[in-house]
Length: 162
Image 1 (cartoon, one colour):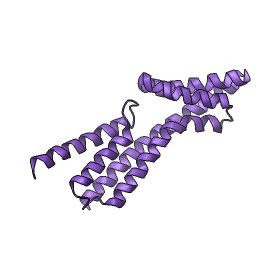
Image 2: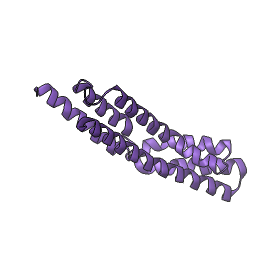
Image 3: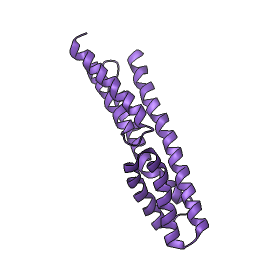
């Protein structure tokens, strides 16, 4: 195997490992990195073992994971009957949380949704219910993103081996 291919495979594996870590760490775009690593691996191999259909499935999973990142908190809030202000607060909290690391991503959407709901209705219980629902949505999305990242890696490795 030429040295260039070895270097590209090392880069591919590095991207995949960083992506799996990014499924949990908000600083790294997890599924995007996993997809980049698997697409690079497919390209290195000339798409012989990991073909276009597999790469398409991996792209769809990466997109699903990305969407979960942005809508999970808002869906949790909406499920709890949140006001428009609470949904806006969850969205603002999600974006702001990206700048404060893992804890920020988990806490600020909850705080934003609860604050928005309180401002809309002046009801502590409703604000708490919406905040908790937002937090549950985020935790479920985190679990789903980790599962999706590992599924992407498994599909890639399965395609390489079989």
